[in-house]
Length: 626
Image (cartoon, rainbow, N blue to C red; front, side):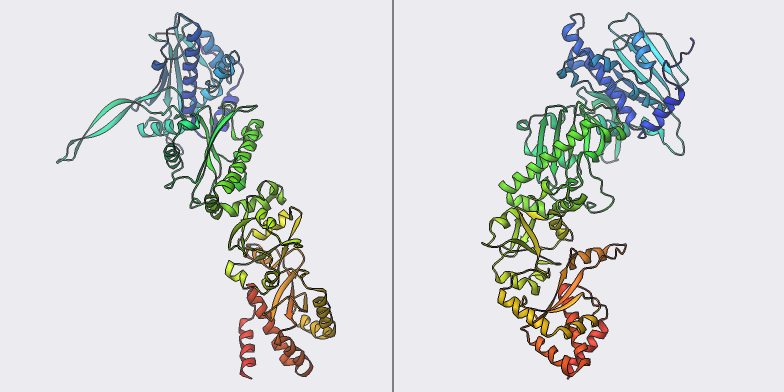
């Protein structure tokens, strides 16, 4: 019989489709099983209105078999089959979809159960096979037909013998190469794994003869193999069940099995959405961070399904970075099964789903914070840094979504609180939200700058994470209250009398302060201050970059050259103030020693390194020994 050419596509198109659209060869089996499921659906729906078709739904199934010796893999179904014209139309034209045409005449509910498009997906089988043979019998035809092709060069169609309606697809699997081990598609374990991964939720049973090893003689350790037909897919996805029909144990088991976690999830979010884009989702907040969460190797994303058939393991487009810890699945009947990652990124339906999921997660976290605070704090201690990063990232464009979810340590309450809680308890006349940054709560509490604010009975938020200060800077204001770093040069908490005293002290000692500033070239200015209580010195900053921010920049691999403008403040009421004034008049050498020691002391208090520790140690010994 003469070979026919593909009607509308060239060899170049078929080669492009095989080599470019489907870079993951494993999905060919998913495509063939999905097409078989479509055929079963079509037959079943036709039988509802066609009295001539005697179809028992529980007898509809898909069968997989393999022959290692002849290198063949067979996928068969007892679905609707195809007539000669349908074979010509559906398989003679690349990307022609018989299922798509069938769907156009169905109701929305019926469409929901038809998975894919018998077209491009079918040809993915050429990625792993040299020859495809399709034998099919339709209830609308008196004869069966066989379609055969070895690739883009063409195909043949001729009459065949087949006793029952349905379709059988036989793939002649390619020989192994140095790059690809095609023989794995003739391995029982590999086939079972692929079916479980991609087609576990096909709603018809997928059956295959599998081998069981049974102990024959315990003393001799002899085993005997026997084969039996098994159903390999679970068929009903947990996320398609009503929430009331799923127990906590069901959720926990699914999560731990699906995402290989040894602990139960902290929170389950199960939802079903109907609208312009309909979908079902089952999301989980883990109880702990994955071991690789804060590494470059970690991949975010939700498992994306099209009506129960896996499209991709981790669809990153469904989650913003600040919710990258979320695990789960999304299943939409409105997404095409035969869709590439590039097309997914441009899909408006996917973008709408992602937006809805983001809103749902935000709402669930807000409810957890309100109704289950202990669990929320547990969550926040694990993933709070990621939320704060979300506030700061992208120039703060997402801050309004997240600002009520972030928490900081309260000096007054000695626990984590929200910004809303801080503002609700602000003292009368308090205009700012005060915060202090440092390596730990204990170290922040010991900062000299904290004393003045605590004396006013103002609460202070202690920021201990590297991203904290960037986070509050991005928020800028909360309920019209601005944020104020206690290490800022202009706290403006002194009384008018104190301000006048400080102003006079700085004016009267301007030459001393100028010389000290020139001696300490790393500081922008040296001044006397009334803000300190018991400590002799501290470092404050002017401008947008604080000392803690500088530490973050300094820790980066590339030197960004961003430095804080530091001011050395000396407690005007401390005995050290009187001492340096005397030294400035009588002994400039000793004055220089004291100046360097005081600056080094201020740097140590701020958690900054001392560039010349040996020199400072020597100076301290000289001063002590006198």
